[in-house]
Length: 362
Image 1: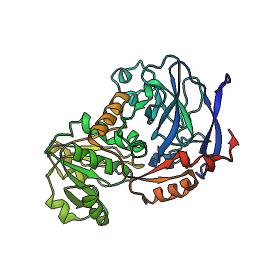
Image 2: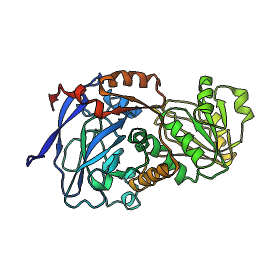
Image 3: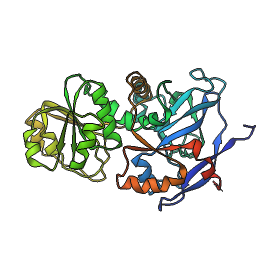
Image 4: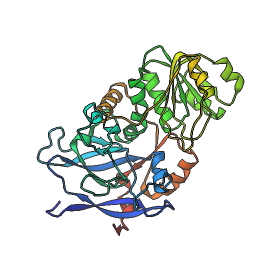
């Protein structure tokens, strides 16, 4: 790859808040001693990608190359890399760097490091702007690269790097993975369907809680859930009061929490993993009366992400995806905004290179 400061990679980037993704040429750094060069084969599309390309949170650094559900193969190794070999199946999630020195990092919780560096729309310690997985290659320090078990297909494994770990981490941390317990999942999208899959793999009785009665058929037939509640049906919700041990709430829009908390048994736990863009309210008595707990969680650390990936390999847990190429990525973003996907778009990079051949230099 030469002696220059880097090498070219093809990508798709949004140049402004209109959020239109177009062919782009960027420069990836040449690998340092601890770096892994990854040929990207697949990249999932997360709802946060949609927020970022449209500057929905007011923090986007344009031009932005999104994508943090990355799978591929090792193409080149730095001289000190010891964990990987050429051709290995690997993955990169939401993080590419942290301080390695704070309490969170020492506990294996790099996702809570105050100096964490996101896979895209962030800055590395040297000041360079991170660009994500909507590209043909990426260079990442080996400590942030995940090994993908051989039995996991790289396309359906890609969403595990965000949607998967986002629900797996709180399920494990808060003790919400006990066989025989009842487990509720609020929302049946990218995160929700992964929560269902983990719940079933852990041997729990799984209930989907949704505003849409139309999702009951797919929840039961496609995902094998044990029960289904329509959250707007007051009679159904009242009949199910104090019947669920744990709830994962994946909804990222403003919604009422008290009807959901009322479903919890005494000592029940509910964890929020959806980043609603408006404050959510509860009356304290809803928690006090049942000694219930409400908490939040944000993705997971590297060690835990590897643990999740290994678990998925052992139990054949993968995402349900719709494969696309870069030629239809803007249409996919429009559909994602309407929740018109079952349940995660994944971009096939091997079929997309010809659609990224008209780049403008960064």
